Image (cartoon, rainbow, N blue to C red):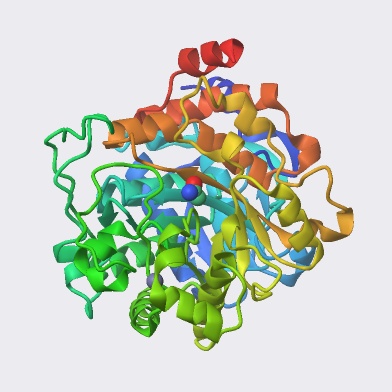
Length: 522
Ligand code: ACM
Ligand code: ZN
């Protein structure tokens, strides 16, 4: 190809949209002689870049490690420097000239995000893993960038259906590409327990297996499709390393004291009634929850969090707390005794008592609890983080004003399990995690946003991808891009180009036809 033909094939189409792009004349061409220039602090990232380019382009670039980095022709220079302090922890500066490429940032995270932006400047064919072409060109530009929110997450429910390591790693790859940085892993629920706990082997021996799922709740007929699977601790460590290499923190969720039927099927003595229970074949709210009157429930929960904290290095652990019916507690001698002994007034207070005990336990190991917004209460420990999904938004506002941190997962915008006719792409894209009612001085209390994929009705990878993409791409943009640059038409154009990249990854995203048609309908 002639140089000017190549030039017309290069374009700037980045998701999430950066803070500032100055488009310059010309192109930079990678060839066999291009080198990666950096210092040893960035060894892993330099190797990741090398690997990325090698896989995609067939170019096997040399890496040169220098103590004092000086820019050189035909090089990609990666540099940590205080000069870009204003771009903060995750920001970066990316300069592409005809002579070379420079990425500078205050931290390795920033450098990593600069590299992700660089990937978006290659033509989509770069994502194909079988390229023979040895010259690749990208447009010249100067890009300055940093995120709007520090928390840009995606939650996957593997309790209702189990997808496994390969699917999770692919999601992590795409999250990194889109600068999403939190993977929230919903690992336990009524329908399955998916994490090995060495002290309580029955949790996986019994709790990870359900015979099937009710075809309808009324007839209670099983579909005959057993759902099984769990992660050994070794698998989890492997996935955590994979995520860390991509600057993604994993936050595990052990949902307690409700949504615990799989645990109760394994250890029925932790319930108020004694059971017995089956790993649940149906969805919705279950009346049997942990008995929080008995001290042995606290021992059990602490033992589990002990193992969880040893596996997951991230300082925040999710303890669920959503949808906890109080019917059993009202009739349970142990629960009622606990209410009396602790001077509590209601069963709601009892849930707060239970949550605070976990908070205290986690704090003693320098960890922080996160829970769904049902945990909110005036007596809830101050450092517990609230994940908002539905109802009682006024209470969330009240807590924000009292200094609590909140992550927004507003169900009507960020629950990707809804079909597109109920939750069109536009609605997700136009969602602002900062509510109108909130005074500016509290904005920083909102850490960011998280899209959730509940998988009751998502039995396989194909369906998972259809629900997730392209809506997660919109979530990545609203989590990163400044509000003044949020523009749905611009996003759609860039999305079109990005979806070509996903074609090379064979992702079963919802087609434009699907989401646009349904967008009009809604
Ligand atoms: C939830 O959707 N139950 C948090
Ligand atoms: Zn009880």
